[in-house]
Amino acid sequence: GAGVSQSPSNKVTEKGKDVELRCDPISGHTALYWYRQSLGQGLEFLIYFQGNSAPDKSGLPSDRFSAERTGGSVSTLTIQRTQQEDSAVYLCASSLLGVANYGYTFGSGTRLTVV
Amino acid sequence: GNSVTQMEGPVTLSEEAFLTINCTYTATGYPSLFWYVQYPGEGLQLLLKATKADDKGSNKGFEATYRKETTSFHLEKGSVQVSDSAVYFCALITGFQKLVFGTGTRLLVSP
Figure 1 (cartoon, chains in turn brown, red):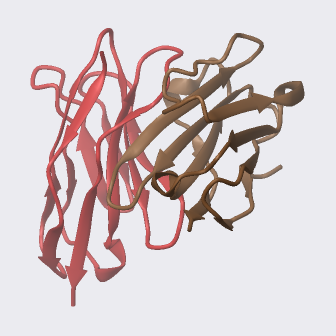
Figure 2 (figure 1 turned 120 degrees about the vertical axis):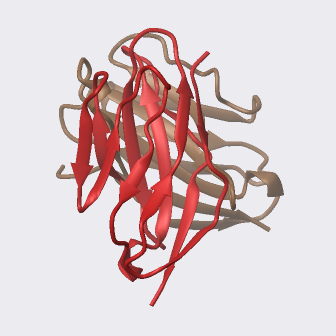
């Protein structure tokens, strides 16, 4: 597509429920990233997919968080047993592998609220 | 490891004032440097970039020069507008790594 698409744009969930957040990267972009932006905070790296390599999961805050990328395109970030501190905007970005130093294209994010 | 330090906000200015938002970095290798902007209610947008020392990135009246000797990439604009009110993020990347962001600086411009 023309840009990075994320869905849903807003999600309200009850504490303890599982949620899935979806990211459609720009067609042909082989690198995909998830970041989290908490209220009043900066951007926290979560996970990075680069082509067919094993993902860099070093930013995932706990084992309740996981992500997958199917067919080298769409990615799903799953948060199990959500907690109130998971409330944040979850941002996805993609880039063309090999030109990552020219920056990423970000989606508009999914605002997650855990009540 | 790589890191970015930005000045604390908010920065509050009157319209047509001069803007500087400081950004310094620590990196292994030779990073590329970026400024991203997030307008209220919107996602992050790339504002400008510089990929090697002494390069100057510019866009929409904003400028930043890659200073290797001071490891800095300060954002400047000669005359801010109310529409520039946003959160500005400095960031860097080295090689095939992930973007590392600063904590962001909120700019508030009043008429």
